[in-house]
Structures are given as C-alpha cells and as structure tokens.
Image (cartoon, rainbow, N blue to C red; front, top):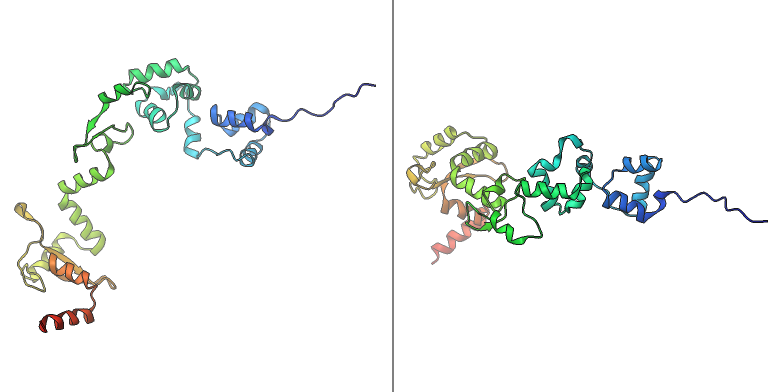
Length: 255
C-alpha cells in the first residue's frame, strides 16, 4: 500500500531567506508579514531575532507606515533623505511608496535631486561654505548645511557674530550672573586686574577685545575677582596650588 505523506508544509516564517526578503528587501513591517501568512507579530519578531536579521528602529517603521495619499516622494527633503542619505534606489523607494521606479525617477528630476549615476550633475549642486570657503554638497534636511560645510563652521560663524550674546549666556549658566553684576564687579576693581592691576575692559566695546575675565574657586565655585588673561592663565597653569606658587616666588627671588 502506498504511503501518504501527511506532514504539514513548513511555515514560511521558518524560511530565513524568504523572511529576509520580505522584511529587508521589500521593507514590510512585522505586522504586514504576520497578517500575510496568518500568524502573530510576536512569531515574526522571534524569528527575526533567531535568524539574526537586524530589526529596523521605530523611526524607520513609522516612515513605512505612511499614507499613500500624501505622496511622500513629492516632498524634496524626504526624497533626498531616502535617495542620498539612506542610499535607497529608485526601485526600493517605489516599493515603499507603492509606485513605479519611473515615478520616483520623475520626481527626482522634477525636484532637482542629482542622480547618483550622473556624477557630473553634482557640480551644479556644489556650494561654498560661508565660513571657510570650502566646496561641499548641501544636505536637504539640515538647514545649516545650506550655508556651511559642517556644524563646526556654523557654530564658529555664529560665535564670531554673536559674542555678546554668548558671553551673557555663559555668565548666567556658569556663574549665575547677569551683565549688570559683571559690570558692578569690574567697577569695584576700577576695571583693573586684581593681581597685576593692569587696566582692562569687560565688554569689548569699539572693537576692543575683552581683557578682564572671571576667576573662581574650582572647588567651591565662588567668584574671587576679575583677572587679566595672563594672570588668569597663570593661576590655571599652577592649578591654584599655593605651595607651588610660593616655590615659584622663591625661585624668582633667588635669581
């Protein structure tokens, strides 16, 4: 008598290659895969862990759960991020948006996003950094990258043009002083360094650089007075060590 194989067919979620293709290549969510093969989401999640298939983070999952009516590919920043920053092909973006790769290609050209295959087109999108004059390609999502080649250049340019604001912010955050308190402290010292008594200023008016700086006890945080840059740096180099300072005085007196 002929034997009949009554074994059940192997569930698709046990097929690593199939699961990888659905989750990574076709970028389906765990819920979508579970619904398609009629199993629980936890089963899919457990198989992803078992087969060491890297799971997407929450932000990527939310990007996939989009509303088709919104046509995300018509948003330049979104399309630029998918195509350039995340390195997805027009085909993959098309699968994500449920449209053809031809549609994605059309929107890439319409929105002026350069093709990765046509490198000569990139020259049209080069910009000159406002701070260092270096050529760079702007980032469609980062506002600073429209003017600067890096965050460091953006910060340096802002500081050079807003030193007054930065100084007032630092006074409040570090020393809990407003500028009026700072001014009163300098006035008590007759605008002189508390050690060498060299005349200085605190605001940097008329293009002058600031020459008086706050000196404080690094252990207690208590403000000790205003010093010129050299005296302030000197105390810092000696690490406020009185014994070392006395030895330095003894050394100078002996020579």
